[in-house]
Length: 284
Image (cartoon, rainbow, N blue to C red):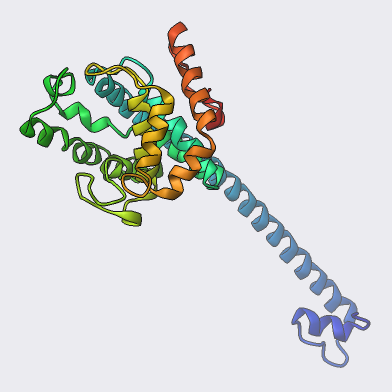
């Protein structure tokens, strides 16, 4: 605590007045100096606060613009993916089903909701590369020739090429999925022949989701197989085509997966599914 004028002078940095000087005059000058500095600091703080508010407003505008740009970019890619889906003879909501199955599997594996939601969005673009494959191959009712299979197996690379180079996490993940969702845990898949955990987690999850959906839905070259038969095929491929840990998680929620598929298909039979702007799991 400051008790004397001398202590006040030393505290504020002013020289202690010489003996015989008028102390009242010195104190008045000191008070005026302190008041002036207080006013200057108050004004500077006000300017700083105003500048902070303006910066926050600009950041808000920037973030809104970036979100709008991201939404526009994603919307364009989703339209392209839907075009690829229709080109493949898939009239239904294959994209939406794969996204939802993948999110549910990731959730069953214990991954955070943020990752499940990101995977739900990214997985829907997994087959975008089919836009680069001719319809005569995609819709061929019979078996593909060796040359046709070579062309078909290029769609993961085509998709990754379309999606790569973005700074958006959802598109980075989508590019990863496109390139890896036809790889097999044993190394017998394509296009890279990756094996085990060298295959990205996202690709391992989407690969299983895609397998289940592809075989339990009608295609131009065959009718849908019964759910129980497809589940048995998945069990048989545990450790070969599919990651055992992901198979186990899938089997724990198989009833939920079937319910999600049937719910989406029922809505589709009535009308087009709306875009979902809430939580990812509210898609069904």
